[in-house]
Length: 219
Image 1 (cartoon, rainbow, N blue to C red):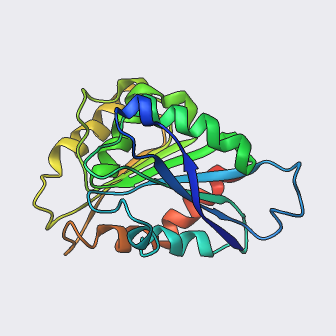
Image 2 (spheres, rainbow, N blue to C red):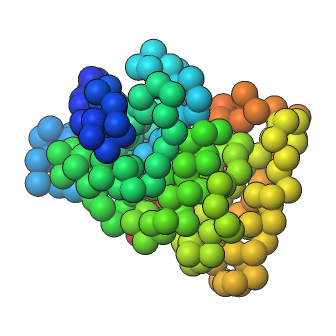
Image 3 (cartoon, one colour):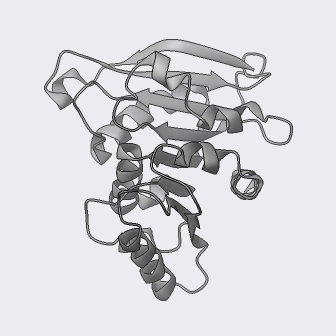
């Protein structure tokens, strides 16, 4: 397994800032030896305060990436410039540029995020549902209307019962998606004795989530 740091993708004009959006790409074993292969991808959107490489290296999502025994995949961690939030169209521009560079399979991209990144995940599920194989928002509420456009896409939402942000709106959105498509794989899990800050650690180490993601990535 290899990690590539300090990869740059410039969105200066789109964001109205001279500071570029950076990303960390964690590449699976055998990536360099198979240049023609396309790999499944998990994109993680960090929360407020996660914009540095130091913070990114501590994210619990990396634990899931390190379990490569059954299904290798690429983990992409974009780093938003300080003081900005995740904007769906800008993320799509970044992703379109990065996937060919790292050998990512555009049909097998999973989007997940925590807090501000969870909001970004919800918003992208509304704006670009067909660009992703699944969505996993954590500890967050979307800023748009319920993501009706994401009907039929696998989506698993997690929220802590001790989180200061209420979980009911997210739970209601999941209920709405189920009502619109009874066969859809959409789930809501309320984590017991879990506050906002430790949600990621509790979620990304779950064996059932690992199994769910690997099944989606096999498709």
